[in-house]
Length: 173
Image 1 (cartoon, helix red, strand yellow):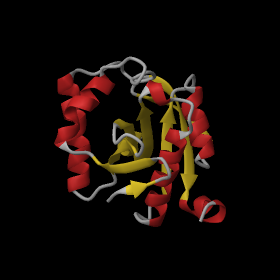
Image 2 (image 1 turned 60 degrees about the vertical axis):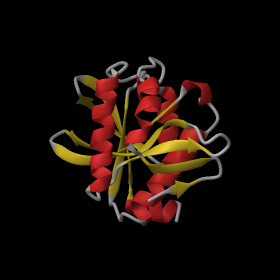
Image 3 (image 1 turned 90 degrees about the horizontal axis):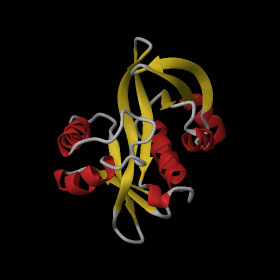
Image 4 (image 1 turned 90 degrees about the vertical axis):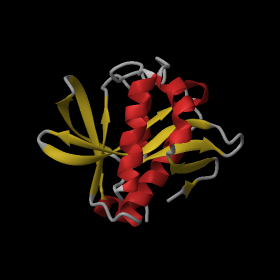
């Protein structure tokens, strides 16, 4: 499954994406508000996980490809997390810092949200966001999500933003 927006192509990851993703995930700006930069081996494990989800027919991450250059600039798609004892599907995203503040992540997140509700018939999705990550909070809000609660995720204070399929149908379909 591939998603297209005016400026992006969102496609499934492949093993050929390792070099570029290892470069991105070693970057402290790209990995800001997470557990920190990843090694090539950790990036390989990340790719194996998301490629496996895709292969198994589960909602997964997409590689964000810039239409203008064909370059891979980050990812946007679905993660599977246990949050407060319940399995949740999260819309998660990261973008090369050279491309921040251009609305690209919002463009990708909206396409992923619409795909989740329209094609995958999901009932509810969340985004887990560090309280100080103002740009990610803005993306979630522009994606129609509202702050639902605060929790502790992986040992960190985390905001849970969410949107239901019903709210999406009322506002965006």
